[in-house]
Length: 78
Image 1 (cartoon, rainbow, N blue to C red):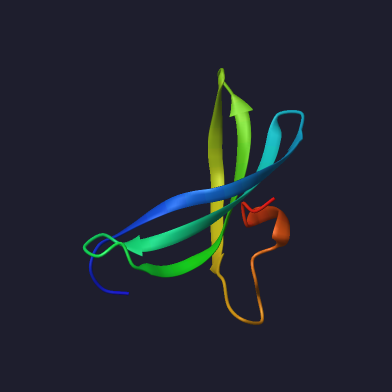
Image 2: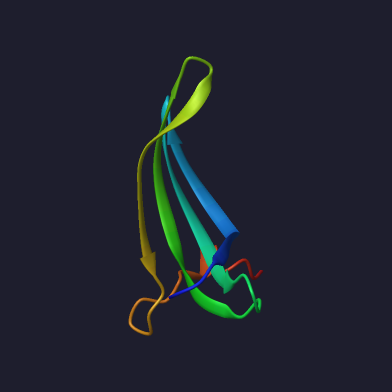
């Protein structure tokens, strides 16, 4: 994808145990110049709580593909 784009969250699911958490956050990426949808996928954040705030320890993501659709609970549709 060339040119600028913006990414916005569609839905998220948080799994927390004590001071650690995993967040699954689905996204849509659109071209900044046209607003055209160019990709969707899921970001996965590993977080830990220390010093009164949450810290990101890692981030991974994968784009949606026909063989790898976004799970229903992360589509934002009820």
